[in-house]
Length: 449
Image: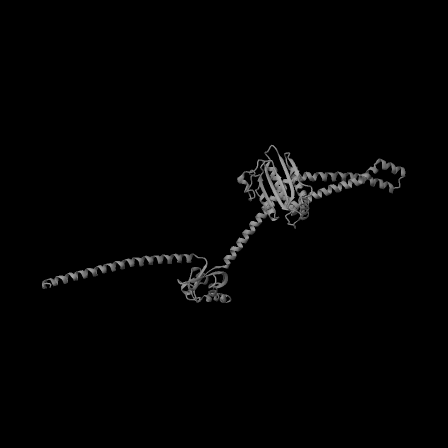
């Protein structure tokens, strides 16, 4: 049994412990409140920063931004829409989206939400009612879902078609300028190739023209003699006088020579016509229909023209058959062959031995033509770039870097192949493959069988 004097002391101790516990709980609660306050302030700062961040993005967007709920009521816009409509954000919030759309497009807007359940809407053209009239827009529309994935609205982003149309127009104009520049470069290179042949062609033309000129002089002399003789006949001179005139003017020989002179003149004129036709075909910018053509004639004409112009003697090994037919545009392939032969000659400029070898055959329905030179070859790193526009291995001022690029394009358009490689025995070998003429390809297959 406790003493009466000890009871007050025990009650006091218990009361002090209770107050200490209460104070401790209050301190803990206050510390928690301070901690939560700090977290709330941090979250508020993050939210404010995020809001400022998204607001800056929206204000910087040149495209129109519209955020709607599931009923089409506007919940958010950006400054681009404000500028387009002339209304501020407070006036736009709460409006029904169809109110901003031209009447002809309102039914399309009503269908957006049902379509969004299946897939987003891309590049849909609508017209918004702007401050200065209707403005056509290309709209993209995406669904807006809540945390549970339920559709609660949509987000629309649109760009004025006027800007797109202007951009497309500028792009088309730039593309047209590039095409025109390319065509001019192609024609320039073609004319440059033609210019390299002028000296040889001029010499080639000079021979038949000189022949025709000489024959015409002879025909003119014979014509004068015959006219004099016929005048004497008309004047009634005696047979003896006419016989003497005939012998003196050697009319019998002139009459015998007439046919040969005419035939020779016609032959020379035909040769001139052939050369002119070859030149016209080579330099023509018109694209004719593809047809079978004499590849042997193309190869030997190109070779003849270029060799005539060559300043240094070149040994030519011609293994091209007399009958070789390919299918395509003869003039365009002529340009390719000229370029390959000219490049081979240019590669041998500093070589002691200048040997040009030409091979051609029909193999498995393809016409294969090869040009090999005895030059120093091409560095390996340059081989992969030979067909790049403006790339050249020639010294500055000696080449445009377009010849092989244009040739490659021509051969590709023909469905053929053009390749260039270093030959294992030295020099470079260029290989051209084209579709052969169907008849000749059939004959080749029959011969092989």
